[in-house]
Amino acid sequence: MKIGIPKEVQAGETRVALVPGLIPLLLKDRHEVLVEAGAGAGAYFSDTQYLQAGASLIEDVSALYEQVDIVFKVQPPQMHPATRLHEAEMVREGSSYTGFLSPLALMDVMETFAMRKITAFAMEFIPRLTRAQSMDALSSMATVAGYKAVLLATEHLGKMFPLLMTAAGTIRPATVLVLGAGVAGLQAIATAKRLGARVEAFDARPAVREQIQSLGATFIEMELSQDAETAGGYAREQTAEFLRREQEVIRARFPGVDVVISTAQVFGKRAPLLITNEMVRSLRPGSVIVDLAAEQGGNCELTRAGQTIEHEGVAIIGATNVSAMLPVDASVLYARNVVNLFRYLYPATGPQPDGTDELARGACVTRGGEIVHELLQPLIREEVSR
Ligand code: NAD
Image (cartoon, rainbow, N blue to C red):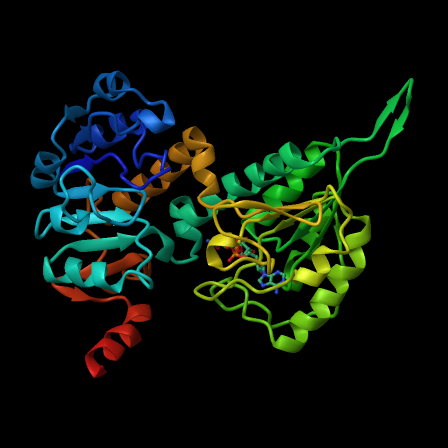
């Protein structure tokens, strides 16, 4: 197959969907790789590196889309600033597309894909199966974001993280509170510990207590429900009563905390509100909140997605697309996830997985002229009934 790697067009997107190091593997499987000139520049991968790895370079992005059988992208299709065409219209009819797609939010794009008989795979829909772990781009990006969140906090905090014993006296370690201990939260805990902070953490799923403790952090105790997790490994949405009790527990920790990293999310829903405006006042001036849930509505009432604001001396960082702040490793991990999925769907030898395959079916959004993903079916019906 001919695989195409266009340059990402979204403002601030630095990642690239394929890194040069993976090209020999695709060539060995007898595929061809076409890369738009400059596609890797944001992640410091030069055109020369792609050429040396065996890819062909192409200047004209429209020509790239016309030639390839499958496109690897990071961001969902959007208006292309140079061609003034929507990327979903640039993908060749009948070809295939793999990337983050935000399918629930971009039903119009999914409809365009279906109309144009594109077979589209959404990286955010990879099911949580053991054999799909090497394709799990959400976890890869959460790992990068959890690490970077701590570094963002250090930049805004007027204190150091570690305990220091100096001739001028002792500096006490910073205290970091991590809310939500999924992949991003656990990575934030590990990073803050490595920097020497005292770390406390909380999650609505009791299963993570041991993981938090094994990283050397303190689990904040609160009565938790044993069915806080779905069969798919995602947190369930908590009741208003639970959130009220949770806010009380968090509020009690706030006077002694320097940094809050919040990562709590429930798949497909608005992020739970854990930090109210009034709670922010109980943090000491100079404290920092990094709200990694900013794109999903934020865990803090005051978070502004994409902005850093200051409220009564507390910095509230609502950074979005945080993994793109570390484009090299984010691209390496993402590209491995995409290539692993591609080689599973289109193996060099042996049969391709059919429509009954849980992994292929779980990731596929459009195929054969239809929107096929079960999560999108209610949205199609809504459109029809309007
Ligand atoms: P996520 O990004 O969906 O959410 C972040 C965290 O927020 C979760 O840990 C969740 O429990 C927590 N949360 C939700 N509501 C909360 C609230 N009110 N208060 C506090 N915390 C709240 O999570 P994730 O990073 O995707 O990880 C979730 C779990 O799934 C982890 O155990 C992870 O190891 C597992 N996982 C498994 C696979 C697999 O089996 N292939 C893949 C990825 C993740």
